[in-house]
Length: 165
Image (tube, rainbow, N blue to C red; front, side, top):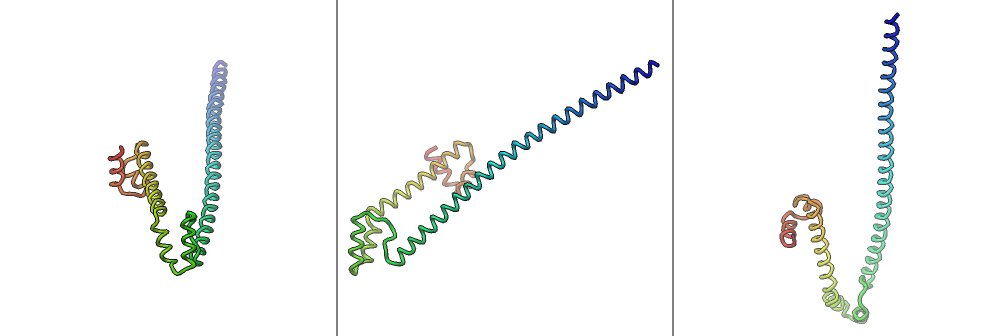
């Protein structure tokens, strides 16, 4: 009779062990579900932000296309394509009315204002690229990684880092 009690005790312990193992497994499944739900939420947020960026990009493309068509129309119709300072605009209008339209256009293109604008554009582009190179270098990226990311040569990266580094 004692063997029956021992067997019953063994079965009870076995049932408790099985219940404990099942509880651990289900707790792990719950954790994994929670983690998957969090990742799904993050992914949905990323998707939403990408959609927003794409919409903004499309709007910018439409705006740029519209501006390009306007400039193209103004150019083909003989109107001024650029917004000029009033004194140069007046000079162009006067010379458009006369025979010297080409000379007026050359004067505008070769004017100190145009040269200054071109220098500012070139210098700001160079400064932006230099800042980007130095920033990526501070992040610990290699010369090759920086060159590849910015679409420039490794020698240019080395030159900037050597001069400013």
